[in-house]
Image 1 (spheres, rainbow, N blue to C red):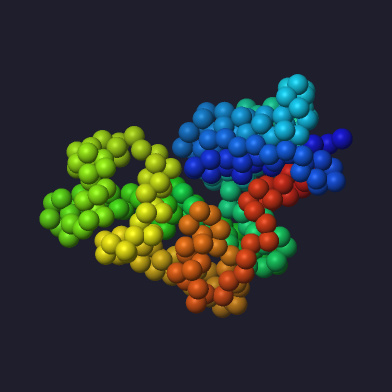
Image 2 (cartoon, rainbow, N blue to C red):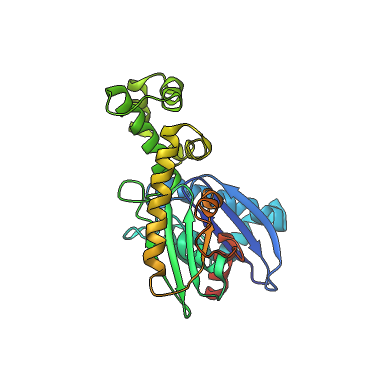
Length: 281
């Protein structure tokens, strides 16, 4: 019996599923962040931990070591668009056959199946995918340093940056911004936090920004929704493609941009990764 492994790996965590030939999912697992560009070794460890958990649930813990090298794997991973990292990871994994794509490709496959449409994946980072007549093209997903506008990490970092601008008197200090400063122990501690913070650390602030009625928070959120709306308008230009919002911030964007034609996701990014695995097999 061939066992298929699906991995959905992002900046906050990763999920795994193991299925049999018939498509029946036998076990699930989870692990820590799996952005293979920002922390390759940690991502590999977390992917293997999630895989072993899924295998243990599927077959029992005594069968994990024997089953690992027999897996046919499809991985949708953040950071897979960075030069060389996917090939390096493929060589470092013990699976029989492995296909690695960006999490955007897996997300589009899972959300749209074989339908035409646009996927706006807005979680820790941000990336967009257009599927049209059987082909998929992605946009964005360049990571927090160079992009990921509208994602949770971008939004959290922007909130801390605005708080520091308020300290300097270049922006209005509001209760929300003062609260961020107090929680971190002041402006100097915010700077110290930022020196080692990962994207996932910044992203933890995003839900609070989105759900706050504070004028500073609402200004930040409005800038993000305007930016995402502009990207979608460009992607839809000359078409009537609907949009599927996914990711941790997806429901918030879907509600804020409800004037845009939308369809619900048919499946998850993990489902898309399973499709990748079956295409390999």
